[in-house]
Amino acid sequence: MNATLPTSPPGATAFGAALKTARMARRRSQLDLALAADLSQRHLSFLESGRARPSRAALLRLADALDLGLATRNALLTAAGFAPVYERRTIDALDMAPIRDALGRMLRHHEPFPAMVIDRRWNLVMANEATQRFISLLGPPDEVWRRICPDGARNMVKLSFHPQGLRPLIVNFDDMAAALLSRLGAEGQDFPEAAALREEVLAFPGSHPRWRSIEPGSRPQPVLATHFRVGDVDLRMFAMITHFDMPQDLTTEDLRVETLYPADAASEQLLHALAGTAPRPA
Image 1 (cartoon, one colour):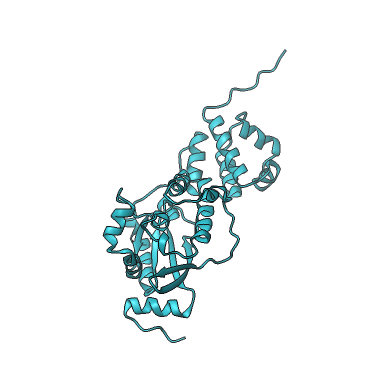
Image 2 (cartoon, helix red, strand yellow):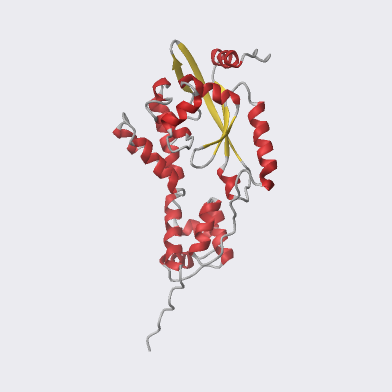
């Protein structure tokens, strides 16, 4: 008598394909992932092929082992037939007030250096006055944004890559572009909108074909200072990015604070001069 394999439950195949994609994007073997998630390699193979359906607990262990973002975890839960766990609130929601206050305080305290809050789409959510002064190097900020982002979004990647944006002011643009495209490529493995943004800026006039061959996640330099030149004035800044620790909300996970710091004494003096402030004592 021939045994009949059980029918794969609805959503198991979609879950298996998504799990395999996430695993391979992180270059993890089935054995490595199975050990990290306390599963047998055989069971993991069955999950990826759609021959088995995960328990909710096993799915979350796999997500932890792969260090997946909350949106990807929700997508896996849905594909496996479970309800999504993580909610999305607007930044203006009442219970987000402590987050807004903390972000605003960080931005104000970073004056006279630029600081901004951006989301995973690289859209500007909040910014301090120093950021507005910096963008004013291109012209009145509202006009700049209408020129670069006519759809109404204020996208920092587009501002950097657009031929009428910051690009003509960046002396080491090739290095900056390589670092940013590498990061977008890595983010695009889990977030399709990052991949779409990467394709959009690669289509801007003057983009080099070699930029398409940049490997996702490759960062040859520990710190990259972007060198701006406006007329005969030089400005060098590097960025630090802050994320929320252990976010439990999709909006909070999406937000990051990018703070720019002067890379030399002349740049620090220039940023203070633009703000009309005196440099702080060392």
